[in-house]
Amino acid sequence: MKRWKIAGINFDHFHMGDLLRMAANHPDVQIVGISDEQPGRMLEAARNFGFSEAQVFTDYRACLEKAQPDLVILCPAAAKHGEWVEKVAPYGVAVMVEKPFAGSLAEADSMVAAMAKTGKELMINWPLAWDPGIRTCKRLIDEGRIGEVLEVHSYGGNRGPLWHGADKVEKTAAQVQAEKPSSWFYQKAAGGGSLQDYAGYGTTLGTWFQGGRKPIEVTCVMDEPAGLEVDEHSITIARYAHGLSKFETRWGTFTDPWITQPQPKCGFVVSGTEGTLAAWNYDPFVTLQTRQKKEIHEHASDTVQSPFQDPVQYFIHCLSTGEKLSGPVSVEISRIGQQIVDTAALSAREKRTVRLLA
Image (cartoon, rainbow, N blue to C red):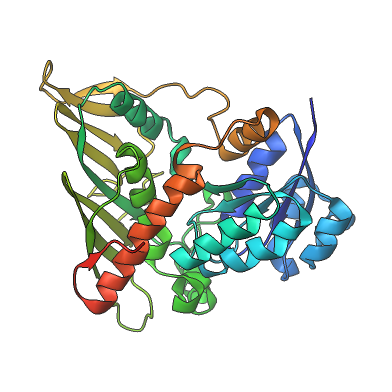
């Protein structure tokens, strides 16, 4: 079996630590280097994974030239995804970008164009795409258990992006307040805000559940917190030819859903012509209603098998076999999700309903 060489470049998003752990656990992967312009942001990863000084770089070009990876994991601020893909693509590597797709639809398209020149694969990772409940929900939809999908409702978020780091290590209130003024999550120009951070989960996974169908128009309202330049709460309504769907984002839930589900619960409800499904984040089951059994009942989540257990495993599988990337991590589905988010942002700014942007 080929030994795939992976490098992690740009540590703006703390999910880099999670993705490196998945890479370290993969039997056919060797992490050959990490790079960030701020050395301090790499200390934890270097310690956790035992990287030597020769594997740690502050210049991404040196990392690519010396480590010669096959695949690069990128975790820049949302509005810098395009810039970093364009920097890395000329080195002829496959690229995995941590969610969201980009800070704008134009930026997303520039990423696709940059990768098209090299013939290498671009994957957008949505961590919830690997959740057993989400995957079970999609399987039941595909099997026709709830008929044709009419509505998707998502509620996504957490206490806030600064309350936890890699491996979901919890931070203190003092740490959060100290980081907030300088964090890209709270800077509009960097792609900050709950809409940009979390709406893509709902719109992209929702598009997957919808079989790739697009809405006609979008209406969005965002809160305007005093002293902040970005939102912490947004509600987006998308009108499709067959009905309405809703995508809500929230920084400031009462609890983090991976520890204790808040109310409202974080997750998805999907309504169809023949039934309904609910997949709450991290639950070991989904709940189902059908014509045959109208009472809401639990359906155990599937045991997810390789290669669908995590993004590194799936990407390596596709690169090894030549299988085309599919589902929410594909450019095709993620772009529709980005279209909805961009249209929602325009709607919120102009305080009106907007036709879906092309």
